Image (cartoon, rainbow, N blue to C red; front, side, top):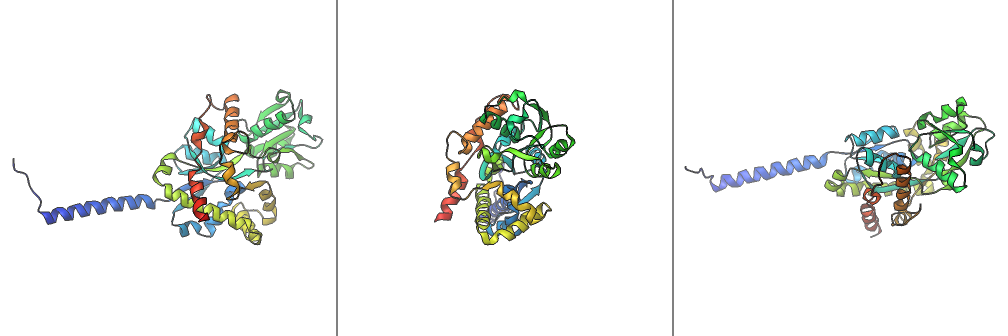
Length: 337
């Protein structure tokens, strides 16, 4: 059987066309924007500064930030609709155990008072909750916060009846009188304080710094394929942090953040006080492997133990697999050059 041979010129042209097609396809793939979910938490709303100032475009990375309610953002990520999602370190473990694993590459902040146990008038401390009811969303970070508070004061958690309540409904449940206290994060915790005259926070995340880290979690496949693009995202984040650290920018920052959630800058400012956004220097120690809440690794182990104990999922996870500091540390080293 005779073989048909291409002449050398035609063969070279065909090879060139094939290579061009491959390169075009690769470029088209790279041009797909990274889809990142963020929600109403100050350390995540801060992304809005980079969006408004077009810093992602300056860094040469295409992104689409998609605004969600918090729980809906995790559901969308688990369904494969997103490249990344903003979650707490404890909730990332839940999403991984029950839906889809992720890798935390950037620590935005830790909660420094925005997560609260808010009690009705007449209740002055956690000890006063004995024999009473607290509304909270079981298995979420404020449940852990409440238990850690009770543990810190040597109080019996069994003395309090937990009423499982979606976090965004806790203000109304407290106002109705159905419970004596609630555990919630901002903005729900703040809404409860406004809605119930005389109510007050009796324990907050400021009493347990590091129990809740807020992190950008990425799909492992996206991280592997587009590592350089994710480094650019991290670089933009530290431009945002530097911008917010400059007091001369406070008014502009508050204007941008508050406009995202449709409240006034004056109303938004206290939310920032309850969120400790980590500087480039501070975050390095948080990324070190250690026990306890000062390390994101130690904090995640505590969250994992809580999740297993309260049957959020069955078996303990390899929490280290959910964290990768390498991209942040590389970006910070490059910034320091």
